[in-house]
Image (cartoon, rainbow, N blue to C red; front, top):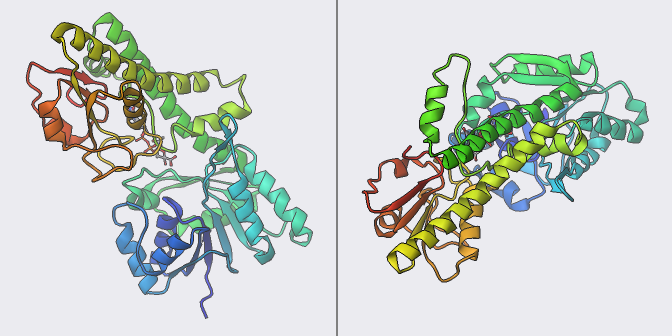
Length: 403
Ligand code: SAJ
């Protein structure tokens, strides 16, 4: 009979690689996902997401019978919750998936079990889940180990970072923290840092908020430099020659499902105190709007000086360079906004990392660059860095692809 050691609830971008990593260490893992198609794919030894090295890891784990998936949890010793925490209402975190995943395993829990949340969560979620568990199973009060351990891996480098990054681990009490550290120490080479659950929850939110604030500073500089007629890329490069200055790069906004999202988890609970974090979100969102407006203005200028409408190339749709992920992408937002405002215009939409899109008709990047009068560089994909745009075209480099 298949008796797993670990149950992983949520087999997405983090849950599946983590399940595969644990299984690689010859520990039996039972993966749970509400999506039957995902479960079937994994049980065939295949994967449903794009992530280097993950396909091999999952194929081997399934073949060696260290990884199985289903839509319902089974009994184990360790339960890990890695489900999404989306928004509800006006940028307020929704922990209902964490809650329903927890409810699903409550009947299976027994003395000594370890329960870990990895999902990005508002401060206090681990305590809330502890209360929920002990409400339903009062006889287990004080007999379980409950901890929070956020993931911090970069999409595209997950299999390496899962093993090598440091982790922050916070239990509801010391015994829980120690138990969770013992668990991760079997799979993680990075240092495991001990804290409490609330600090660990806050730490995840702060890491991504810190990056968001720093990018907002760079984006703000880009707006100032545009007015002041200064090349922002040169400016940042020069300022960064100072030994204690390290400014990030401006772009056409901040995208993805982490940095553009997590700061709201702090702002929604502590609105009066998180002024800089909230403003950074506004600055980064405004930058996308500003880029779309800038494209409109350049189109009008072209029309006035040439007596005809320009052909416009919008280069890149992904949320960051050299990936195929379009979720929460500022480039996609800009393309939508520009096209909405001018349905008869002639546009070339480019995204070299995908072959087709359900809304946009895609054009090859070389053709687009050759045919367009105005070229808006939205994502600094490597392909764009090679293009010679000549002297005639209007090039709007929002992401420093050519600098
Ligand atoms: N960006 C800039 N300028 C920069 C750097 C990034 O505009 O100088 C933009 C990117 O173009 C993109 C966005 O920021 O639109 C986010 O990209 P990213 O590469 O900074 O981060 P993500 O979202 O892919 O992954 C982040 C990582 N967090 C940090 O670096 C603090 C990762 O380690 C986390 O695990 C991940 O969020 C997560 O899951 O929370």
